Length: 615
Image: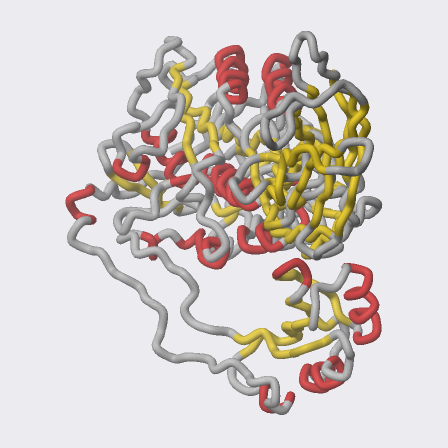
């Protein structure tokens, strides 16, 4: 069946539809896959290096454990000495997956690496079975998942519910079991309402992106993400204005990715505007390249900011129907694709309409790992991680290569690294600072604050700032928001990163220890008059928690009255009041008296402050 032809916008990619499978047929066939019983025993530290290189392992790959998390430059120096290349890392550089650039004996390189002071362990990259595999009944018929390494990608993420993919298409079956509770902001751009027409094409596309991993039916590339279904078709056609309106609606409603499995050979300015609007708002646009086996530009796929996707077969060959040309950016499986159709059914379809959602789903996985990446950053990751097919590097059939979900996730940086502290026991001296740093990746802003043991913010260090040189660095001098030294105890340095859609938070525990000498500053606020009988009010400030004694003495040094006796007070300003009487509540004569305030800390350090007061 050929659905291409004509110049009107939105003529769908050619499909070849096979048998439709009903839900009733699925409920009786549910195979549960579990991991095998064989185990790979971890090598003990004393195990000779050569004994580690037995069994199944990946050729030319090593797993290196360092004694501590090394900076990138330190790791690179080691790689240079041994001809290694870092493929990935865990725990911020504590473990590294490395490959050998030249033909060398793995065990020999491992033995040499073990001599490095910074290296704790080296082992081959063992191959274990099985990796995660969904139990959905018809998953085994979805060949494209294994082709793009989706099962390995799902070991890292199956998609976040915070990521939304807009399917701008011909409506869909919103009641399909595969999308239960995961559809957001449905919209019919033709009628301006939320009710959508039943449409096999749109339902099929949505299923490729995000059909649930629910133990039956099929599975999407990113089964955990949200789907925003938008209809733009009236019958077989959709006009450019409606499509542009739908794109803008999707972005304004929070879509992160726009999938457009539609197109025309006619350029549309309004659609280009909508595509640029989406990109500028931080959303990706992915479009099908067309199904006429021609190099003519197909829009919106041929627009510069849109990711154009051609279709490949199960043999990693360009599909015989797929368009090609200078505008192709990526390729993806698009032949014999099993996915959802209306009335809780499933069917096979062909077309670049099926290839585009494979790329959209992979993009959704990348954003699930790091939601702060810009469209340009996600695009670079997809290009860098794709499998090169055809002629070396870019070509007009496969673009930059066939998408690989696992490699894309491996190339995706974490949004937030680990918090680095110059110390976890901050001994406040009054002139030193605690330094807290955090590396980040993506477009975001950040707030850093100190959190007390009660979970409340006691001091903001950075507020809503953009990262500098790939991260945030904050300094804390141990003081609270009011300028006084915080009481000794447990605190957390909190980094909160955010954009217009989401936020992430990391904390690092700090123990604050007072290592500064105690100080007291006092002053009389007002003086009493024997006629008015008003009190003498004294304000004093202590710089740390102290046991405080305060007493009034006459000019002969004799005790008149004790106001405080070894009272535990926190670091802040306090007030005392003397009513002008002695211990026997007898009014003292007018004159000058002396207030003596003594403070002692837990380390038995003592400070005394004397202030004259007039009565």
